Image (cartoon, rainbow, N blue to C red; front, side, top):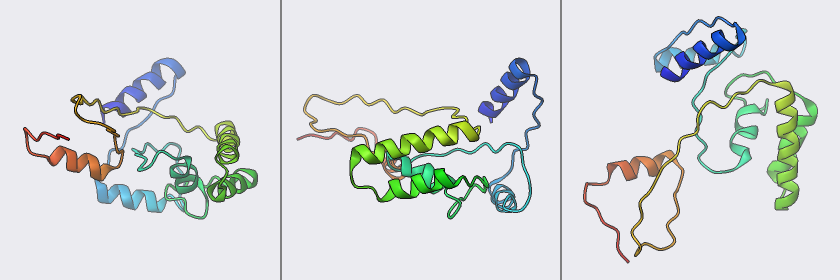
Amino acid sequence: MLETQAIKAMWKDTLGIDVNLNPLDPKAMRDWRIARATQPYNVYYAWEVAGILDPIEYHNAQLDPAQNVRNSRYDDAQYVELIRDAKKETDTAKRTKMYQDAEAIINRDVPIIPITEDENFWIVKPNIVNFDQVTTALTNFIRAAQPPGLDVTQ
């Protein structure tokens, strides 16, 4: 909630925009989001975490009209074609370029504003090799649930 209050203050101070915040419990939020399929709204603040480091997480999962859980109603034919083709592209360079082109379209048309990016910092003992941070919520939960004093050795 602090993030939205800070955004509200910045928009007021910088842009002269007054914002009403309507915090909702999880069930009310789900019901509100479902209702947006047919009802208008101006701004939607959502916490999104990518399970994998891939543009598919946001472009295809969040903005493709065929599976748009946020009900953005965004439906640009060129954008949709790019993200659907990029999803199937096996050439990494071509796929990257297609998502970059799609990103340019969405940035031109839709005011999606990233607010924060969480970072995890790890202190890794020298005897740990090939350490790779996995970014899924489940692994963060598992790591958080590990007992104190757990030590990983070779």
